[in-house]
Length: 175
Image (cartoon, rainbow, N blue to C red; front, side):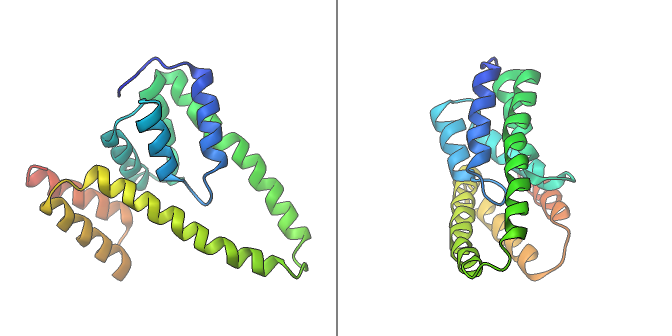
């Protein structure tokens, strides 16, 4: 927590913008740029820990937005961040789903869908780099991150168990 007490309306508008540019989950690179670098509402550690908490909890993994909003402005900030991040995007998603259904026969639809896939991969890769830069500080951290990646890509282990195991291992070795 770096600046508790930020204006709830500013939090609402900031998280609304972040929600509207977060396709398929979150645009972590932009979230880090705005919340850590520009607004100084959270630290890189808060960003990484909030994301990890979101992976352990059931429901949408971007519940971290509530955590970030709380860090920025207490309970009013948490409510403003949650409403701003999810409210407008839920309405937009519903409208897009209805439009998608109406355009199923449109010949350009598969091309547009295919063109969006590399964009989604780029956004995810940028998020991975942001989290790695903020949370992998030494060789032990890199080994834990690589092991978690291997477990998640080569097995069907529940991601929450991987997060909890990595946290326990990190605590044991003093990270």
